[in-house]
Length: 123
Image 1 (cartoon, one colour):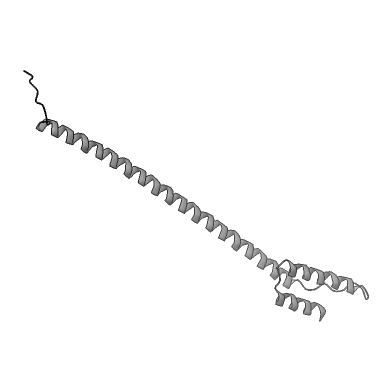
Image 2 (cartoon, rainbow, N blue to C red; image 1 turned 60 degrees about the vertical axis):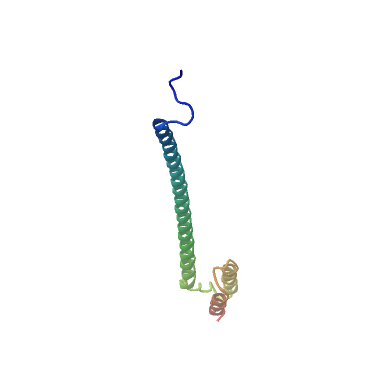
């Protein structure tokens, strides 16, 4: 006669099966939690990188705007050159008008600033 029982497992077998299921569930849930944490960390790092890039771009734009403003102030602070000699002043004035037109076409001077500077030069 066989000594083992047939059919359903006994109390020890049921406890062993429960322990295996619980251990597997714990391992799986730990892996899921670690994977989610890595994803969130990656998203956070990407967001930080994008914010840093945006900040650097804003700084570069602000620096460029400050340089343009300094250039405009320098252009206004320089007095117009006095004509050299009696009849040769027309060429110098033309050069200054061309310089103003170039600055206007490059966007350094607005329409109003260009008109004001031109009036000062001609008047």
